[in-house]
Image (tube, rainbow, N blue to C red):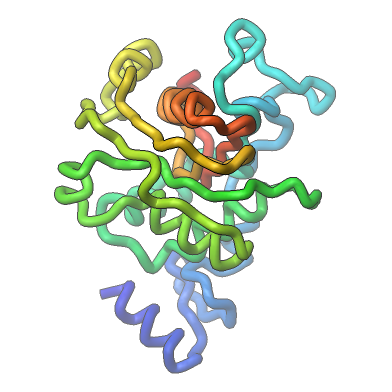
Length: 234
């Protein structure tokens, strides 16, 4: 119902109501700029995996020093804490598609101001059975929003998930890595630089496995773009 009301207000060019504070505002997102300002930000973080660091002069976390991930850089601006946690759950598990433009906006805020953007955006793929159960791939929804805003090409089909793995949320870091082994396949790609898009980076196991398959297919640089970063599960 909230999604229908929000869509109607946009089509009629009316003020939107913020889904958090219930105040009217005049931008096209489901969350107002004032509520966005109160969302916890990462601050100094590892350039590889975006894990928070205690000092802005540090650039790489201990985990990435021990084992560098297959993806090259992670661009994430926010911590996976309330209220963003609940909004992401609403988006993924309760058909909260009205949040898609807001969540893609959070990703854009994390991107550098330079012109080194990827040549193509690729969503983390879901197994067909999981898509059938949920009804959509949240990463693909975000990719479409980002591609439109940034005027970048995207690819929804070249990367596929070929194993219907156990849900990652119930597994620890080591189990996540084993669970995703050989779970993805990627066609030969023409791009040197791509960005993997997902809603959340937790341990990085999913992004790491997908980045490995992308680099085997000929990609040289793989970035990771997400709405939020979990900070206690590396």
